[in-house]
Image 1 (cartoon, rainbow over the protein chains, first blue to last red):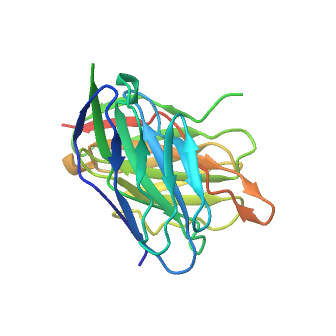
Image 2: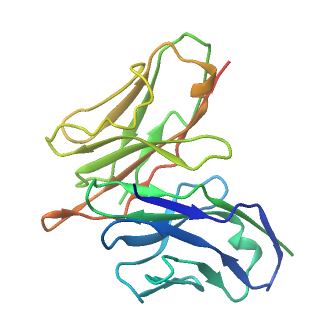
Length: 112
Length: 117
């Protein structure tokens, strides 16, 4: 079945460091891929998405490129801020069962 | 416009009691999802409603869990005879239909933190 695997956390970085959170997937067909973010005390919200191979999603300085050849959708940011401290979830939507398939989440802590 | 709201935000209950959790989706969103998020775990799908179609209950962990959606809007998740392992954050999300297909972007409520003592 469809699945998402993302790197385990927690990830701790200093402000202005480079961030990568790895996400790989298994899916039949051509899924859409997402990163959601959950800030402390807030609900999950969509950060970025990509709906076909080689698409790059971007938002708030974060980027992720849909790589079909490596079945990956790694999240990157060139210079993290303390306000980026949150839990990040990778997810896919294959459309066949109308459900998002979620990774386990990666906690990020950015220190000043 | 209001987002997805859930109530209560926190619920502490004794083992064996029944609890009801409420979700108000965004107006006009016909799809509604319930998830469970346990400490250190990802999101566990519980149930999905779409319009007047029969709900997808494939994620409900036991027959102690049930949910209904009245008038295609508000939803209630009921857990009967609660157990300690039911302690988790219960999240509700809603989304739109776009054309003939559901939008994959889900809008989440803040969740209900359930603690079973």
